Image 1 (cartoon, one colour):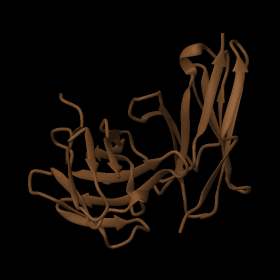
Image 2 (cartoon, each protein chain N blue to C red):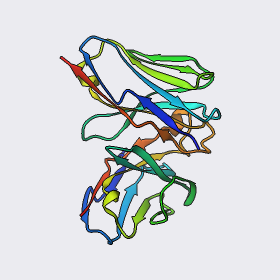
Image 3 (cartoon, one colour):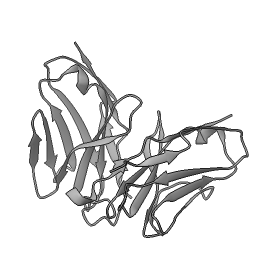
Length: 117
Length: 113
């Protein structure tokens, strides 16, 4: 079974631009979560989608948005990019919303490294 | 919301020694505590987790302990090996899945051969 895939793997943008990142979960997984990873802040939760509905949202400004499609693939969008948005963006998928059960373990993708100049 | 603090931020041990990483959480409703290992340039991977109805859990050289009263949990790695070198993240959540995982800031473990 293929793992979580993310595209693109690397991206360079300039301030003010917008960007769309894509995540394809493991086949059969219906939950996708997005995280921002930076050296200083660790792993920060962005949002989680399950069956095309946003279930949870982290403390990020409205410039960060996402969606999930009927095939469970998810996209996140960042508008009006700022220098501080430079980070590794990780998505993770699980069969059901991530919780304390073996069936609901989160599997991470390789990430998209975004650099904002 | 939940807040998870993790210490130390960096830890260097000699091969064969033990390593301990500690985390505290703020929300008493949290009842699921996973630990992730992220090797350099790779994605985070779940290595062990514990639920609040259990005080300790072991898996070979790795163990996690939980103190619900004090709201802290720890990762113990015994007989460390160079391949244990990585960044370790603790997290807290709810078994019901109603709240997302809140991660600690990470501990960079370096095992010196």
